[in-house]
Picture 1 (tube, rainbow, N blue to C red):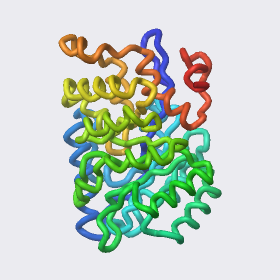
Picture 2: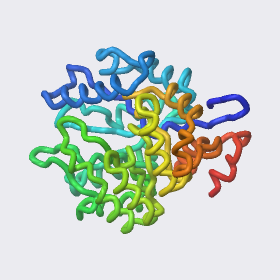
Picture 3: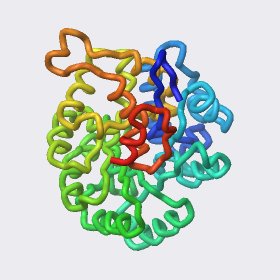
Picture 4: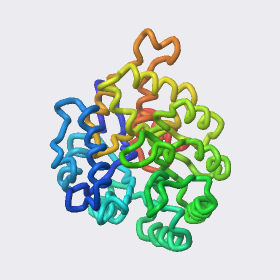
Length: 334
Protein backbone atom coordinates (compact mmCIF):
# COMPACT_ATOMS: atom_id res chain seq x y z
CA UNK A 1 0.00 0.00 0.00
CA UNK A 2 1.26 3.46 -0.83
CA UNK A 3 -0.13 6.43 1.07
CA UNK A 4 0.45 9.93 -0.21
CA UNK A 5 -1.36 12.63 1.78
CA UNK A 6 -5.03 11.67 1.87
CA UNK A 7 -4.72 9.27 -1.05
CA UNK A 8 -4.22 5.50 -0.77
CA UNK A 9 -2.99 3.25 -3.58
CA UNK A 10 -3.27 -0.53 -3.67
CA UNK A 11 -0.24 -1.77 -5.59
CA UNK A 12 -0.08 -4.81 -7.87
CA UNK A 13 3.30 -5.15 -9.57
CA UNK A 14 2.36 -6.99 -12.74
CA UNK A 15 5.78 -7.99 -14.02
CA UNK A 16 8.55 -9.26 -11.76
CA UNK A 17 11.32 -11.84 -12.02
CA UNK A 18 13.45 -13.99 -9.73
CA UNK A 19 16.29 -14.68 -12.11
CA UNK A 20 19.69 -16.32 -12.10
CA UNK A 21 21.94 -14.24 -14.34
CA UNK A 22 25.20 -15.24 -12.67
CA UNK A 23 28.22 -16.10 -14.84
CA UNK A 24 27.91 -19.75 -13.78
CA UNK A 25 24.43 -19.89 -15.32
CA UNK A 26 25.36 -18.03 -18.52
CA UNK A 27 25.64 -20.75 -21.15
CA UNK A 28 27.39 -18.66 -23.79
CA UNK A 29 28.15 -15.13 -24.96
CA UNK A 30 24.48 -14.62 -25.72
CA UNK A 31 23.53 -15.18 -22.09
CA UNK A 32 26.25 -12.80 -21.01
CA UNK A 33 25.13 -10.20 -23.53
CA UNK A 34 21.47 -10.57 -22.57
CA UNK A 35 22.18 -9.99 -18.88
CA UNK A 36 24.47 -7.06 -19.62
CA UNK A 37 21.85 -5.49 -21.89
CA UNK A 38 19.37 -5.67 -19.00
CA UNK A 39 21.97 -4.07 -16.76
CA UNK A 40 22.42 -1.22 -19.23
CA UNK A 41 18.67 -0.54 -19.05
CA UNK A 42 18.93 -0.55 -15.26
CA UNK A 43 21.97 1.72 -15.13
CA UNK A 44 20.85 4.25 -17.72
CA UNK A 45 17.24 4.70 -16.59
CA UNK A 46 17.45 4.43 -12.78
CA UNK A 47 18.09 7.31 -10.36
CA UNK A 48 21.57 7.18 -8.84
CA UNK A 49 20.28 6.06 -5.46
CA UNK A 50 18.52 3.07 -7.05
CA UNK A 51 21.47 1.75 -9.05
CA UNK A 52 23.08 -1.60 -8.18
CA UNK A 53 26.45 -3.18 -8.87
CA UNK A 54 26.55 -5.67 -11.73
CA UNK A 55 27.17 -8.50 -9.26
CA UNK A 56 24.03 -7.70 -7.27
CA UNK A 57 22.05 -7.26 -10.47
CA UNK A 58 23.00 -10.74 -11.66
CA UNK A 59 21.10 -12.44 -8.85
CA UNK A 60 19.01 -11.36 -5.87
CA UNK A 61 18.35 -13.47 -2.82
CA UNK A 62 15.00 -14.16 -1.21
CA UNK A 63 15.55 -11.45 1.40
CA UNK A 64 16.38 -8.92 -1.32
CA UNK A 65 13.15 -9.65 -3.20
CA UNK A 66 10.97 -9.37 -0.10
CA UNK A 67 12.70 -6.17 0.98
CA UNK A 68 12.66 -4.43 -2.39
CA UNK A 69 9.05 -5.27 -3.22
CA UNK A 70 7.14 -5.44 0.05
CA UNK A 71 9.16 -3.89 2.87
CA UNK A 72 10.13 -0.65 1.14
CA UNK A 73 8.50 -0.95 -2.30
CA UNK A 74 4.82 -0.56 -1.30
CA UNK A 75 3.76 -3.65 -3.30
CA UNK A 76 0.70 -5.56 -2.05
CA UNK A 77 0.78 -8.36 -4.63
CA UNK A 78 3.39 -9.24 -7.27
CA UNK A 79 3.03 -11.38 -10.39
CA UNK A 80 5.95 -13.53 -11.54
CA UNK A 81 6.46 -13.53 -15.31
CA UNK A 82 8.90 -16.28 -16.37
CA UNK A 83 11.50 -15.94 -19.12
CA UNK A 84 13.19 -19.26 -19.83
CA UNK A 85 15.89 -18.53 -22.47
CA UNK A 86 17.29 -22.04 -22.16
CA UNK A 87 19.50 -21.50 -25.22
CA UNK A 88 21.33 -18.77 -23.30
CA UNK A 89 21.23 -19.92 -19.66
CA UNK A 90 22.16 -23.36 -18.34
CA UNK A 91 19.19 -23.72 -15.99
CA UNK A 92 17.01 -21.12 -17.65
CA UNK A 93 17.03 -17.44 -16.78
CA UNK A 94 13.80 -17.05 -14.80
CA UNK A 95 11.62 -20.14 -14.71
CA UNK A 96 8.17 -20.86 -13.32
CA UNK A 97 9.76 -23.50 -11.09
CA UNK A 98 12.21 -21.02 -9.58
CA UNK A 99 9.50 -18.39 -9.16
CA UNK A 100 7.06 -20.91 -7.77
CA UNK A 101 9.39 -22.09 -5.03
CA UNK A 102 9.42 -18.58 -3.62
CA UNK A 103 5.70 -18.09 -4.13
CA UNK A 104 4.95 -21.27 -2.20
CA UNK A 105 6.69 -19.79 0.82
CA UNK A 106 4.76 -16.52 0.54
CA UNK A 107 1.42 -17.34 -1.13
CA UNK A 108 -0.17 -14.12 0.11
CA UNK A 109 2.45 -12.08 -1.71
CA UNK A 110 2.98 -13.68 -5.12
CA UNK A 111 1.07 -14.98 -8.11
CA UNK A 112 2.95 -17.40 -10.38
CA UNK A 113 2.47 -17.33 -14.14
CA UNK A 114 3.54 -20.03 -16.53
CA UNK A 115 4.92 -19.98 -20.04
CA UNK A 116 4.78 -21.93 -23.28
CA UNK A 117 6.47 -22.09 -26.64
CA UNK A 118 4.47 -23.39 -29.65
CA UNK A 119 7.64 -24.89 -31.09
CA UNK A 120 7.39 -27.55 -28.36
CA UNK A 121 4.21 -28.80 -30.08
CA UNK A 122 2.42 -31.75 -28.37
CA UNK A 123 5.01 -32.20 -25.65
CA UNK A 124 4.60 -28.58 -24.63
CA UNK A 125 0.82 -28.88 -24.41
CA UNK A 126 1.20 -31.71 -21.92
CA UNK A 127 3.71 -29.66 -19.91
CA UNK A 128 1.30 -26.72 -19.86
CA UNK A 129 -1.45 -28.91 -18.41
CA UNK A 130 0.90 -30.13 -15.68
CA UNK A 131 2.03 -26.59 -14.88
CA UNK A 132 -1.55 -25.32 -14.74
CA UNK A 133 -2.44 -28.01 -12.21
CA UNK A 134 0.79 -27.57 -10.23
CA UNK A 135 0.67 -23.79 -9.94
CA UNK A 136 -3.03 -23.04 -10.43
CA UNK A 137 -2.07 -20.80 -13.34
CA UNK A 138 -4.16 -17.73 -14.11
CA UNK A 139 -1.74 -16.31 -16.67
CA UNK A 140 1.22 -17.03 -18.91
CA UNK A 141 4.15 -14.96 -20.15
CA UNK A 142 5.15 -15.42 -23.80
CA UNK A 143 8.44 -14.44 -25.39
CA UNK A 144 7.99 -14.51 -29.14
CA UNK A 145 11.62 -13.56 -29.87
CA UNK A 146 13.16 -16.40 -27.86
CA UNK A 147 15.69 -18.50 -29.75
CA UNK A 148 15.28 -22.27 -29.97
CA UNK A 149 17.93 -24.06 -31.97
CA UNK A 150 17.87 -22.64 -35.50
CA UNK A 151 14.63 -20.75 -34.89
CA UNK A 152 14.86 -17.11 -33.84
CA UNK A 153 11.25 -16.47 -32.97
CA UNK A 154 7.60 -17.27 -33.55
CA UNK A 155 4.25 -15.50 -33.91
CA UNK A 156 1.03 -15.56 -31.91
CA UNK A 157 -0.76 -16.22 -35.19
CA UNK A 158 1.17 -19.46 -35.89
CA UNK A 159 -1.04 -22.58 -36.07
CA UNK A 160 0.63 -24.21 -33.07
CA UNK A 161 0.28 -20.99 -31.12
CA UNK A 162 -3.48 -21.19 -31.68
CA UNK A 163 -3.42 -24.72 -30.26
CA UNK A 164 -1.83 -23.36 -27.11
CA UNK A 165 -4.25 -20.45 -26.83
CA UNK A 166 -7.11 -22.91 -27.15
CA UNK A 167 -5.54 -24.96 -24.36
CA UNK A 168 -5.32 -21.83 -22.21
CA UNK A 169 -9.04 -21.28 -22.68
CA UNK A 170 -9.71 -24.90 -21.76
CA UNK A 171 -7.58 -24.63 -18.60
CA UNK A 172 -9.02 -21.29 -17.49
CA UNK A 173 -5.78 -19.39 -18.11
CA UNK A 174 -7.23 -16.13 -19.33
CA UNK A 175 -4.34 -13.64 -18.97
CA UNK A 176 -1.85 -13.85 -21.83
CA UNK A 177 1.15 -11.58 -21.19
CA UNK A 178 3.22 -11.07 -24.34
CA UNK A 179 6.62 -9.37 -24.48
CA UNK A 180 6.31 -6.82 -27.25
CA UNK A 181 8.87 -4.16 -26.52
CA UNK A 182 12.42 -2.98 -27.10
CA UNK A 183 14.88 -5.49 -28.44
CA UNK A 184 17.33 -7.14 -26.06
CA UNK A 185 20.69 -8.43 -27.26
CA UNK A 186 20.96 -10.80 -29.11
CA UNK A 187 17.23 -11.17 -29.89
CA UNK A 188 15.83 -9.87 -33.16
CA UNK A 189 13.78 -6.68 -33.16
CA UNK A 190 11.29 -7.95 -35.75
CA UNK A 191 10.36 -10.94 -33.58
CA UNK A 192 8.94 -8.51 -31.00
CA UNK A 193 6.68 -6.82 -33.56
CA UNK A 194 3.21 -6.24 -32.14
CA UNK A 195 1.24 -7.03 -35.31
CA UNK A 196 0.45 -10.65 -34.41
CA UNK A 197 -1.44 -9.50 -31.29
CA UNK A 198 -4.15 -8.14 -33.58
CA UNK A 199 -4.80 -11.55 -35.11
CA UNK A 200 -4.82 -13.48 -31.83
CA UNK A 201 -6.95 -10.98 -29.90
CA UNK A 202 -9.65 -11.13 -32.57
CA UNK A 203 -9.59 -14.93 -32.66
CA UNK A 204 -9.73 -15.30 -28.84
CA UNK A 205 -12.03 -12.61 -27.45
CA UNK A 206 -12.37 -14.40 -24.10
CA UNK A 207 -8.64 -14.09 -23.38
CA UNK A 208 -6.93 -10.94 -22.13
CA UNK A 209 -3.77 -10.00 -24.01
CA UNK A 210 -1.55 -7.88 -21.79
CA UNK A 211 1.07 -6.47 -24.14
CA UNK A 212 4.10 -5.95 -21.96
CA UNK A 213 6.05 -2.78 -22.73
CA UNK A 214 3.00 -1.60 -24.71
CA UNK A 215 4.73 -2.30 -28.00
CA UNK A 216 7.58 0.20 -27.56
CA UNK A 217 9.09 1.43 -29.79
CA UNK A 218 5.97 0.67 -31.86
CA UNK A 219 3.60 2.63 -29.64
CA UNK A 220 1.45 3.89 -32.49
CA UNK A 221 0.96 0.41 -33.94
CA UNK A 222 0.01 -0.91 -30.52
CA UNK A 223 -2.50 1.89 -29.88
CA UNK A 224 -4.31 1.33 -33.17
CA UNK A 225 -4.57 -2.40 -32.44
CA UNK A 226 -5.72 -1.91 -28.85
CA UNK A 227 -8.37 0.58 -29.91
CA UNK A 228 -10.22 -2.03 -31.96
CA UNK A 229 -9.49 -5.00 -29.66
CA UNK A 230 -11.14 -4.48 -26.24
CA UNK A 231 -9.29 -7.48 -24.77
CA UNK A 232 -5.86 -5.90 -25.33
CA UNK A 233 -4.14 -4.20 -22.40
CA UNK A 234 -0.95 -2.15 -22.11
CA UNK A 235 1.67 -3.28 -19.60
CA UNK A 236 3.86 -0.34 -18.53
CA UNK A 237 7.09 -2.23 -17.83
CA UNK A 238 10.01 -0.38 -19.49
CA UNK A 239 7.79 2.65 -20.13
CA UNK A 240 7.67 3.50 -16.40
CA UNK A 241 11.35 4.37 -15.79
CA UNK A 242 11.29 7.09 -18.44
CA UNK A 243 9.34 9.05 -15.85
CA UNK A 244 12.76 9.84 -14.34
CA UNK A 245 15.14 10.17 -17.26
CA UNK A 246 12.74 11.46 -19.95
CA UNK A 247 9.61 12.81 -18.21
CA UNK A 248 8.16 14.49 -21.31
CA UNK A 249 8.63 11.29 -23.29
CA UNK A 250 6.84 9.40 -20.53
CA UNK A 251 4.06 12.02 -20.60
CA UNK A 252 3.60 11.37 -24.32
CA UNK A 253 3.53 7.59 -23.81
CA UNK A 254 0.98 7.67 -20.98
CA UNK A 255 -1.03 10.39 -22.74
CA UNK A 256 -1.32 8.41 -25.96
CA UNK A 257 -2.21 5.23 -24.08
CA UNK A 258 -4.93 6.97 -22.08
CA UNK A 259 -6.35 8.52 -25.23
CA UNK A 260 -6.54 5.27 -27.18
CA UNK A 261 -7.15 2.69 -24.44
CA UNK A 262 -8.45 4.66 -21.40
CA UNK A 263 -7.36 4.10 -17.79
CA UNK A 264 -9.03 0.69 -17.40
CA UNK A 265 -6.57 -1.16 -19.65
CA UNK A 266 -3.18 -0.02 -18.36
CA UNK A 267 -1.19 -2.03 -15.82
CA UNK A 268 1.74 -1.07 -13.61
CA UNK A 269 4.96 -3.06 -13.59
CA UNK A 270 8.41 -2.38 -12.20
CA UNK A 271 10.02 -5.16 -14.28
CA UNK A 272 11.91 -6.08 -11.11
CA UNK A 273 14.82 -6.61 -10.86
CA UNK A 274 15.64 -4.35 -13.81
CA UNK A 275 14.11 -1.59 -11.69
CA UNK A 276 12.71 -1.43 -8.17
CA UNK A 277 9.10 -0.36 -7.51
CA UNK A 278 9.68 2.19 -4.74
CA UNK A 279 10.92 5.09 -6.84
CA UNK A 280 8.65 4.25 -9.77
CA UNK A 281 5.54 4.38 -7.61
CA UNK A 282 6.58 7.54 -5.79
CA UNK A 283 7.38 9.35 -9.01
CA UNK A 284 4.22 8.18 -10.77
CA UNK A 285 1.95 9.33 -7.95
CA UNK A 286 3.71 12.72 -7.96
CA UNK A 287 3.78 12.95 -11.76
CA UNK A 288 1.59 15.25 -13.78
CA UNK A 289 1.46 15.76 -17.53
CA UNK A 290 3.16 19.12 -18.25
CA UNK A 291 0.78 22.06 -18.67
CA UNK A 292 1.74 22.67 -22.28
CA UNK A 293 0.76 19.05 -23.10
CA UNK A 294 -2.52 18.96 -21.18
CA UNK A 295 -4.66 20.35 -24.00
CA UNK A 296 -3.73 17.24 -25.96
CA UNK A 297 -3.47 14.63 -23.20
CA UNK A 298 -5.44 15.89 -20.20
CA UNK A 299 -4.30 15.34 -16.61
CA UNK A 300 -3.56 12.32 -14.45
CA UNK A 301 -6.03 12.15 -11.58
CA UNK A 302 -5.64 10.05 -8.40
CA UNK A 303 -8.44 7.84 -9.73
CA UNK A 304 -6.50 7.11 -12.92
CA UNK A 305 -3.33 6.43 -10.95
CA UNK A 306 -5.15 4.03 -8.60
CA UNK A 307 -6.44 1.98 -11.52
CA UNK A 308 -3.06 1.84 -13.22
CA UNK A 309 -1.11 1.02 -10.04
CA UNK A 310 -3.25 -1.86 -8.91
CA UNK A 311 -6.99 -1.95 -9.46
CA UNK A 312 -6.84 -2.99 -13.11
CA UNK A 313 -4.67 -6.02 -12.40
CA UNK A 314 -6.74 -6.81 -9.33
CA UNK A 315 -9.70 -7.08 -11.68
CA UNK A 316 -7.86 -9.32 -14.15
CA UNK A 317 -6.52 -11.65 -11.45
CA UNK A 318 -9.45 -11.60 -8.99
CA UNK A 319 -7.28 -10.10 -6.26
CA UNK A 320 -9.13 -8.89 -3.19
CA UNK A 321 -8.72 -5.15 -2.64
CA UNK A 322 -9.24 -3.49 0.76
CA UNK A 323 -12.60 -1.79 0.70
CA UNK A 324 -11.16 1.44 2.12
CA UNK A 325 -9.42 2.05 -1.20
CA UNK A 326 -11.62 4.47 -3.19
CA UNK A 327 -13.53 2.81 -6.01
CA UNK A 328 -12.19 -0.61 -4.99
CA UNK A 329 -15.51 -2.41 -5.14
CA UNK A 330 -16.41 -0.87 -8.48
CA UNK A 331 -13.03 -1.61 -10.05
CA UNK A 332 -12.95 -5.26 -9.05
CA UNK A 333 -16.60 -5.87 -9.92
CA UNK A 334 -16.61 -4.29 -13.39
